[in-house]
Length: 314
Image (cartoon, rainbow, N blue to C red; front, side, top):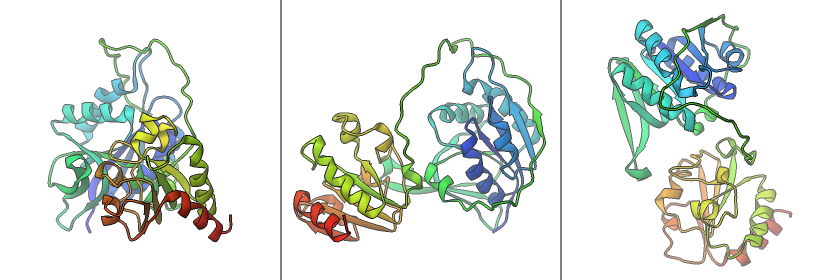
């Protein structure tokens, strides 16, 4: 496998630079990190890039207002790829950078590599997660949003990178149509499903919110995280939005995925179809999940889960 001449990685979140830097080093001969806003420059300087640029968010502006400055610098230095970690704020920023560079964004990339001809290849979901496609970029600059599952699974070489010097890009001007007027803290549940090696996911087969205790017991026995389908998180509100798995939620690559009381619709299972082993528990023998699992148990979850937890020592 050959390498690209130059790869840029961009983030406003310090915790994303370790994974982004690892991907950038694998793909490119030279790497540049771009830290957006306050607090990200130190992490960017330690991610293995040869150079680091810092761009300040204009007063009263938004993170995506930095896109013009990033695109201008990219246009001048001509990287072969500009990589972002997929997130709510970075989607718009990546789209603006791509538009300025005359290209488009490769969204939610789960795999990315360089072939022997020096072209960048990116695997991403299409048709709402029903299939995967591989995009090939032979020339010009590729702008890609990398899925969280890719970033957390990318091997990071500890201690291999020296801290790079940081230089500032020209400040961007604030957008006239939208200004930041207030910040309010949002309460979120501290869970990182993409990094979990084992996950138990629950659907509407659970009849009442208090019955989720059965799922929690099984997850504890497996030392697993608990996830859910979209109706459980956004319909009934039984679980936090951060635990929703699926095409617009978390995309996982665990060693073990246990599907409990869920039908197995593609919108959910696309978030877990990269799991090494999938186990399903559902009383409906015709549930689509049984076509996607390695092991299936056709039975009532209220009978099966306590027995599984007991067998595992809970």
